[in-house]
Length: 193
Image 1 (cartoon, rainbow, N blue to C red):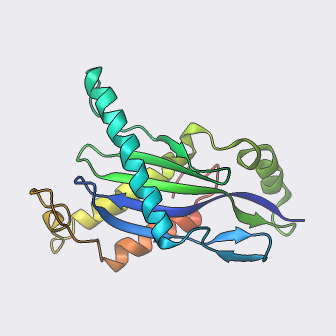
Image 2: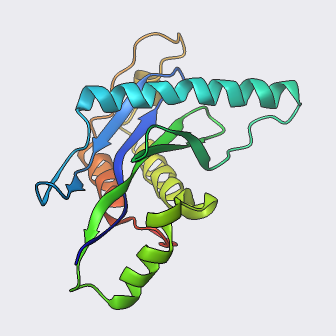
């Protein structure tokens, strides 16, 4: 018997000028074909990531109106449909990390420990994710981004120019591998990545 639990379908890093810096798409479990494949096309994921920018902007306006400033919340941005939900975090430099979670993206069969299957049945698979479930993901993404910034050959202004126009995508293989590792290793209940 197979049980489906949430998995990460897409991880995105968006620059301070709302330009996409990096997008990693991860495969999800499809019970009809019993195989793993992305649940959306790269273009659809790009559009989903872009749609989160409106939510970030609304939160920034709300915080500015209430003299709160940038809170750096880890939280649900919006539920895309019954299967996908997007979560986001904005750093104090304006870089945004977005995670799109597939609520039925990972298969767990009988060969996995019974405790994990029971937790999956009781937990996220039935009701959604708790607020703090994404915190380790954002913390790990921010750590990977900071490591990238520490590289003396990486020029952040090349990727988010002060002029606000243009910008290159991040092409660092190490950064891409770190982000992919984060997406592949996350499961509900993980406390560190």
